Length: 289
Image (cartoon, rainbow, N blue to C red; front, side, top):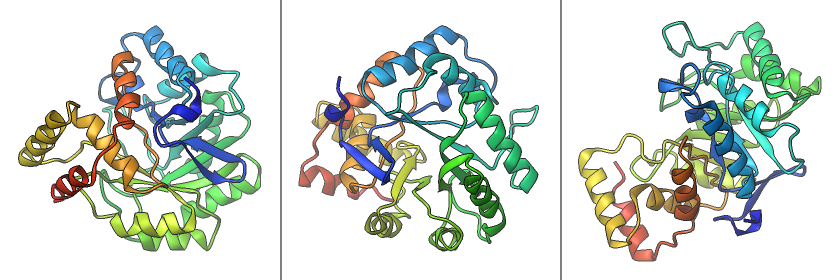
């Protein structure tokens, strides 16, 4: 399948960075709870190669998935990388021995994380590095100038091409933009959780990509039932409807659904092509918390 046939087409983050709006999130390629190796490494490699065959040019990852495991699998599966393939990674957290996600925002930790991502992905330069600074699903108030400045310095050193942010507020984005350009923002957002509606439109006006994570995360039982009912009326699935709604929400929205299943990968790509009518979108909008 050619990339131009993928749902949503492409989005240009920067002059040298155009990606398919339908991307792939590699988090689930690690073991259970995103910790340790997968049960079937060969299957994970096959998934990544199919992602590229489908024409997807945007893979989201992080060295703290595993840790290290997901990036090592990406390297084994896809290196040497196609010029059209862009890998977006994240720094700002670590994994502890119990599988926790402690923050790692000190300058030396961020520098080490960037070098680790380069080593495990087998790259000389990272296309995009997102600084993750907030909690699980919402920003943490406060300045992000110090950690973002570290990444801007690494960008000037040629180790990073572009910078992004994850789990941040509008104020934190504005602060970061006084230090270096921001090409993407990755926050928790879906049909039921719409706190970033205004932010999405603001970023769209600036040509900045918005990358929502957890398209089905945090739904109440009632919201899930209603989404399932709408999906059934469309002869589709809740995930397909959620992805289609996100693609239609704004042209700067990029998707990174993750899966370790070949069938689900194809379902996600096909689901993104679902076209929702005005009535469908209106009904879905009423699910907002």
